[in-house]
Image (cartoon, rainbow, N blue to C red; front, side):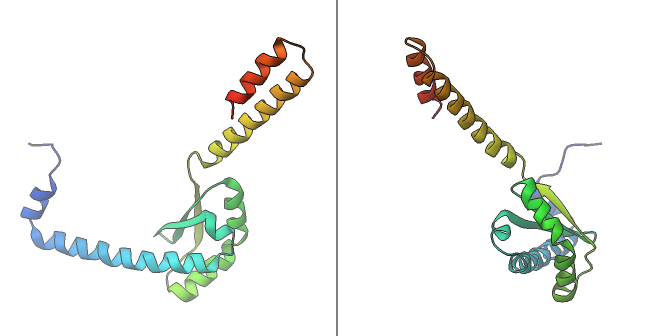
Length: 145
């Protein structure tokens, strides 16, 4: 038995009709998802709409990605209103919102803030130091920018 995965060419050669139906199904879903994404963006107010994106609708859930935990919290506060609008305007059964935080988005912001606070501490330390330590600390702080 061959356990290697089939190439796209092999898939298209065998059982053409089921693949065509599957591709049509995905194409229809992509169009529908785009409409749901537009509805979702219209429901949110700024700046929340700038930081949240509807990724998928599956098993009665809106799957949403946010930039940071703070936006996820604000989104949860509006969950009931969003679900109601989706059930009325999008004509789909939605029961909850699953929020995913974009990996690294919070960490990048925290790392930037951390580096800035380290630089500020080094500059304060340099102010209270005497030469030659003061010059060396100022050089270090310059490199941190």
